[in-house]
Image (cartoon, rainbow, N blue to C red; front, top):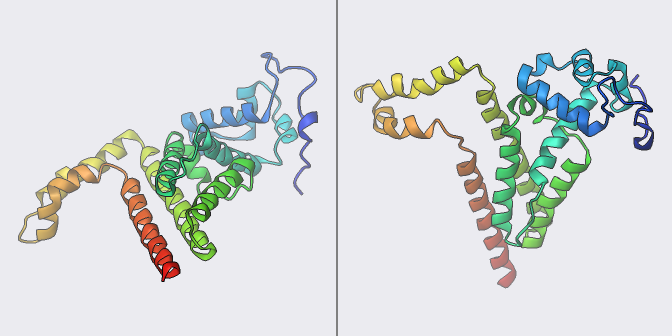
Amino acid sequence: MPKPVVPEEKRRRRRPTRSGTVLSEELIVETALRMLREHGSAGLTARRLGLALDADPSTLYRYFRGMDDLTLAIGDALIGQALAGWRPTGEWRADLRSFGLRIHAAYLAHPQAALLTTNRVTGRAHELAADETVLDVLRTAGFPLHDTVRIYHAFIDQTLAFAALDAASLALPSDSLHADEDMWRSTYARLPATTHPRIAEAAPLLATRMLTSAYPTALEMLLDSAAARLEAVSGTERA
């Protein structure tokens, strides 16, 4: 049975840790993000986190029900980083583009954390704020409710899917990452046109293009589709 979480106002320790630090949920999440960056998911345990915080591991359960609850908090913190400082302009396409790119970038700044959290639903404040934002942008733009939900679903899942895919590459050991990238030059670029005419034709472009994320392109394609749908809806209403 999960342990009850101590209410926020009662969470602070009466005394600081041995290093003089007063624990908080934010500090624990920040420390967990650093540990993930340095050691990967296998290195994030309650014992190691307690050592990093100079606190008994059991203290963590005053803030989180367990390591899975901490995982959700980490995911929500990444979304919070994307939200920080972002303001809508009132132009739906520009707003969704900038918001999607910010979410994608926030996850890629912490690739190990991204691999751990992109497939989770946190139900926490930042995730709820992000969902409310996307839905509001679409509804304010004039999309019917059914189309709003359909586009929201595609937008969120596409953003997180590319974040997970791109983070997986960044999380590879450097030798493996460089080997994968070099494959486009060492193998694909040398295939003869007699056996692989389309690859040979595209090889110079592939060698450059495949080293970057396809997310910006996929996002534009999604926005093109959404814009066409909005135009069709508007045309029907005018008829």
